Length: 129
Image (cartoon, rainbow, N blue to C red):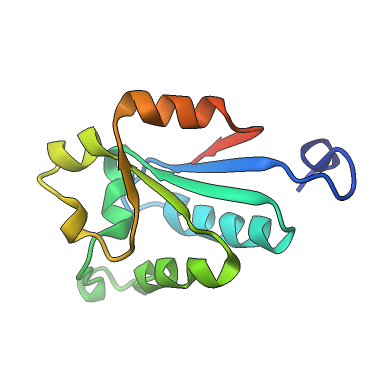
């Protein structure tokens, strides 16, 4: 993290990482997850938001064999061990993709797009992947 993001040593910043892309086909989802884990190591207040095709990152039963890529979705289950417990999913993104909270592999808070905007507005830093 840059010095600007960390401003003063020991100051906790509120970081929200917004996942907008499908989990495979680009590097965004995996790179985003790695940045989230690094941020947590610096003891920042980290939350994750899943909107648009980003909701697919949390879908149960991902099979990546045909893609020849490793399935990294189980890593989301380990986030709690890094004190990353604030996971938000936009309701409209779930519904427009025919998904429900029961289709997701981790516990999340489902919020409306208006509530998501409020959550983002309350952060010190918002980074979108």
